[in-house]
Length: 354
Image (cartoon, rainbow, N blue to C red; front, side, top):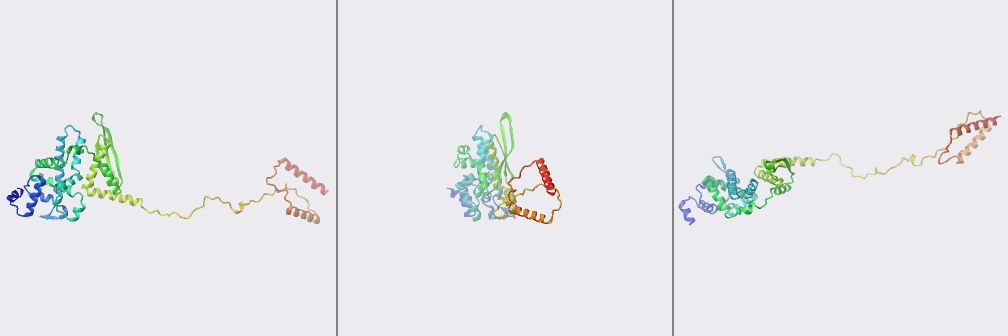
């Protein structure tokens, strides 16, 4: 039956007939202007041009992203009557996140219709999700907003996604962002921008993501977790869509690692040191014992030569062997004792001379 309908359309090429049939199975209706859908399935790696302009699905992806967000937001708003804005935002985010769109593209068969180079199709993990968004953009241009609403509500949510299960399933964007930063070895931080009370006394938290000091997404929420989750989600979207943002992060990482890996000019000596051993100079190791000196004698008259020689011999003998006057501790004498001894010696010498 579908083949007969396609034959009545009188398409010029067999390949276009096959494309119409495939799109009908995906969309649930026949396109009016096949040109939009061809472009939606054309990856930028093909590098086709018309009138000097590149023809690919990037512009339709941009448009479809906005339309898909509005359509899903509309459906979620109606389905969850009375729920707060934070709940609605999280639910919409779970439905339109890249992983979900990639799975939908595979399940619907969109991935098989994408025209791309073999390298791009095997290495670009966003290929299917991007084409899905571009296809939504093509539907909008070809059929209008109402057709997009019907496609998402009946074909997607009706057959592939349980909106209630999705709404209460926790998606940890913060965990995903931290995992990405660890794989790429970049520093990440969550900075408190503001904490305040809003109407009714409820707390409001504002957090911002910093990656290598580069400012990322800012999130607001009634809890720290909610605000950090929102900031993480916005940052992940920037990482996915803004190549210059990633370039700035890795440039900052390069500068940081370059500073950390700067060589030290002075290389430490590997020889062991023994400066903890205390040594004494050789002359101090065996200090000479002090000799007790006799009190200074008063000047005497010169002795006769023979007597002088005999006294000298006696002094030399005493100096040579007599150690009785060497003590470990010098004798403690008072000043009066010293003077008395000196006077006694003087009187003795005087008597000898007489």
